[in-house]
Length: 345
Image (cartoon, rainbow, N blue to C red; front, top):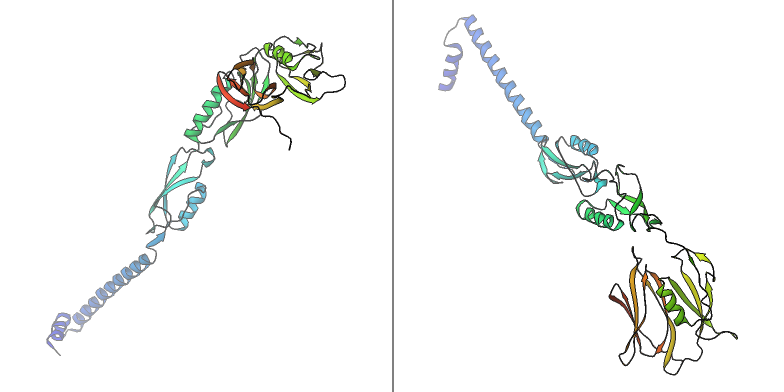
């Protein structure tokens, strides 16, 4: 037996041959050894188990409801921390709009993931817009689009009625004020056209030249539409041969007059007959419409001026070829039309 064995023997038995002492020492050695082995085995098992679940992948949970997001994190042995915030889109309410760490990040099991959850838009109830001017509401909605996203829009067409309120005043709205906004919402509006004026009695415009008719209706701010037809046997070319409404009818002031002109069959040499048709925007308040003709020599002739609410305009003319028709709204020129003869091939 070597020196180490001798020392171990002396440590265990101390050279003492007493059986009781020898048994006691042997028992203590085995007990201590058993405890050490159990500790080592436990630590080994713990570290092996820890190593098996140490890393996990953070799932992508943006865009889903918070309840489902929490379930996904729990399945990955991850904890959550929720931060609430307003977002631009009202439809995001209750959805995860951001997370930290980012999706795909490898982390230890038991790590915490911060979830950024939308509270929806900062505007969640519909205001009372009755009494507003519709132009102000349109500007207000545009400002909300830039801040919160497309929360509100005005449903077209807007219902317009005669009322003592100023033109453009909102008289009623649907949904009602205070309604919860749970999604992008269209507002139906009833808007004042202003007080209803007196009705007018329709004059008899037949047999007048289209220039005379144009001057008369423009002076009275009566909206009009001109069309043409080939001159009949009893028709005088260049005159109005029919009208609607008929003469002596009593109609509201905003009624549009429709006139039919017997087309000139032989205009003077170098002259052209026709009708300029264009569609203007609809104006909330009637604007000043001016129409002028610039001859090839540069001479300017004012054809007519009137208040107009927009929509279709028809301008009959009998002018020199290469004359320019100029149409202005509120002092701003919006149409330039060069008169050209139609050449037959």
